Image 1 (cartoon, rainbow, N blue to C red):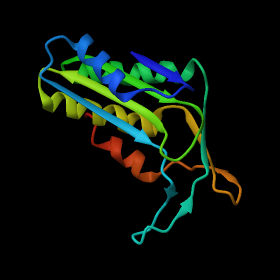
Image 2 (image 1 turned 120 degrees about the vertical axis):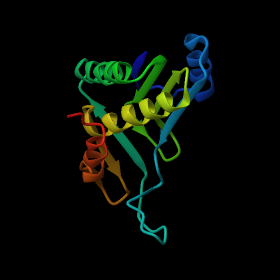
Image 3 (image 1 turned 135 degrees about the vertical axis):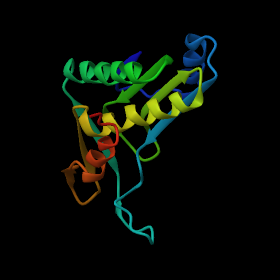
Image 4 (image 1 turned 90 degrees about the horizontal axis):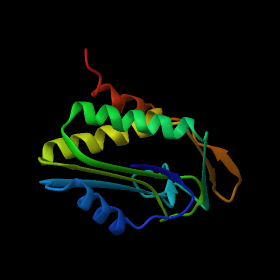
Length: 156
């Protein structure tokens, strides 16, 4: 199941729903992404303080892309259930942005599929992020590390 929504979600409710829909799962792996207070923090913890993060998307296109990512994960691994929620709109430090839950009979499949889904969400899903640091707002550029992360999933 996939949702793109403005409303916050409850991780424990989403976990329980995933567990119930998975039936006889041997493993459930979840990932929850949060809005950070500091962006591009250095090793000393100094960075740009985030006042808010606004995510925009293209309705219809975004959901289709997320469905394709989940479908590919289901082709690669034996999965019993998946759940992806991605929020849009204005959020603040500490708010949940994304939830990925994967249930499988075995932990290796669940871990791999959850990582795969997150790597592809970060690099391929049509979301645009704008940060407000108090000194103004700016669009967040894609990171090279996000593109590099999906290289390991490429099959020859």
